[in-house]
Length: 168
Image (tube, rainbow, N blue to C red; front, top):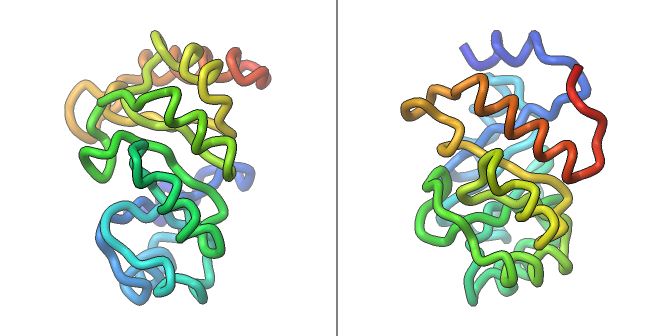
């Protein structure tokens, strides 16, 4: 089902499989079947187990006192870090500390996540200066169901703050 949805996306859009507490063999099997071109790892994994993984890896990092050490530990594995609230593997809708996130974003390429919506994404981008932004639960009408109007408002606000061209 995922592979069919991804097949219709333009080639310029990254196909990222988000996985929690998965091992490399299971991640590769799922990524291959689904047709994703990179994975985002959330949860408990060891960087050394992923060094030879054949797809690009994004690593979710909690914005807390351990965030810098986690970025350092994964620096030879991950091409990008997703800065998120430390309480859950993701999708909590809870904001991160922008001061701590900005410190982490200066050390490696990072996306900012954690409680972002159209109402706060511009301020978050200005404070943290991330490579990009991510959003999930704040844009949903119910778990797993995005509100198209909220998504469009979020994307437009993020594009404006990042200086990217607007959607037509």
